[in-house]
Length: 150
Length: 279
Image 1 (cartoon, each protein chain N blue to C red):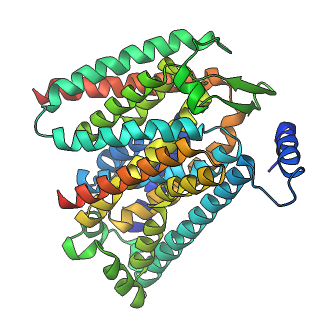
Image 2 (cartoon, rainbow over the protein chains, first blue to last red):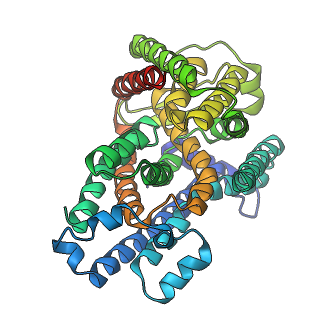
């Protein structure tokens, strides 16, 4: 967590003249960094919890190879494809539901970072980059919508 | 093989894939897909679903450290992401119009050539790059503290419009072929825009995560992401990428470059082979 000397100088210069606190780009980098770490840890916790639950519910998974083939070739109903299905699985305490929730937390992390950048560039009053990041975010949403339609 | 052994084996491979992907700016699909299909006998459909998860996990696991250490040039990444996303959408529409065979051969050759030029540039240090009005106007230049050289490295970005165009091509190609997005982005940033090698790989690492996240919803809805397989992939890759991201500032640009060139040559060979076999 050590900052380089120049970063400390930047902070001092930015915050000293004005009476109220203005976040510097370095502060924002730190916030984004912590947010990313939080998302990753939550996701990891669900992934581990779900996998442990799965093995607890199916002790035969630990020793015999009987179920391996079925697990490698899941049928339609075994793989969750929508959010409601995931919460149903969690309600019944199924480990795979928790795993799917962990994946659902993980998947949007990079897009969230783009969304956060729109906010940070806005705070920095960087008009050009507010437009650029908002454009990227719209294109990502567009490709998501187009993908679902196709 | 019991399900526990399957899970453990996939986890182990994924730690390696995450570490390599985070250091070189690649998604880790290069390791995950062949390992899952050849070593563990999984269906290619679920292997590709798992590799999308692996790309996102590589990017997210490494991002916390790369943002904090200023290894990622966020402004350049965001600007170039415009080209990549438009390219990915273009590629999705061109699929079926353009045949895969020649694309595999052409881009296999492009990657092979890039690898050779990148290797030739391995001795260069801080470069004086041609001035670029776009990079000045958008303020894309950056600096990072290099723990290997124990100094603050200031660098200038150049050929911004060319970089944007190359990112569009990278987006189209990865949309069409489903591979090679990191393997095209890093050479574009290194050879055209002259970013330091470590910055190129960290910036590519961020960009591939964004693109993969946008397409992951489709794979999920299609039922291609099997949680039993994706869990050890995601967990392993996250751990590997997080560990490697702490290592990157300490490694020399030259080391990263040589490792990247080797992987790029391998990918190039694979693509050429695929192109020849498709015929």
